[in-house]
Image (cartoon, rainbow, N blue to C red; front, side):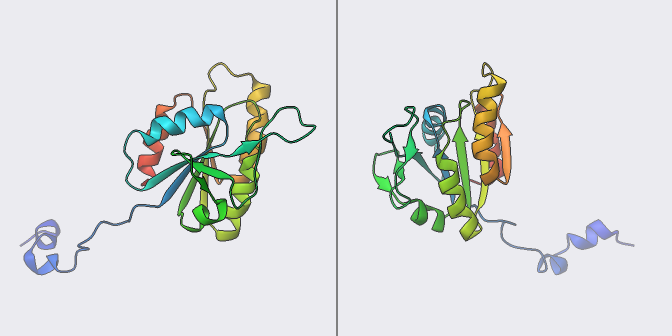
Length: 172
């Protein structure tokens, strides 16, 4: 009598097997929301991801603010790493996943602009808070308050290498 494993590996049963990978890579957009995030995003971009593109938030100071940057208009609020201005709307329209990267300190105001665009288009989001080993709870809380409402998953990364592993798991 042939056991179930032997029968399932027979040529007759092979025709029923899925002949392609079980999932396709996602079109991933990785966006640095502040200077700490930018350092990590630039490092990630240099490691050769096939299905990910990398951006920084184009920021400009507002009259009367405390020096914190705020994003430009939604039609030109991103820059690719070559410095070209990109539209948040256009980039989110072509994404399956948007990863937001920021450091502690509350300089992630652009998370709301990007998050709204992702919500309207039902694009999955993930947030990574980096550089937290020496950050105060207050600084971390400020960034979490900005990123958390717009991220389906938030990771407080003790090591920036963790992001590499997560991007692999998320098929970036």
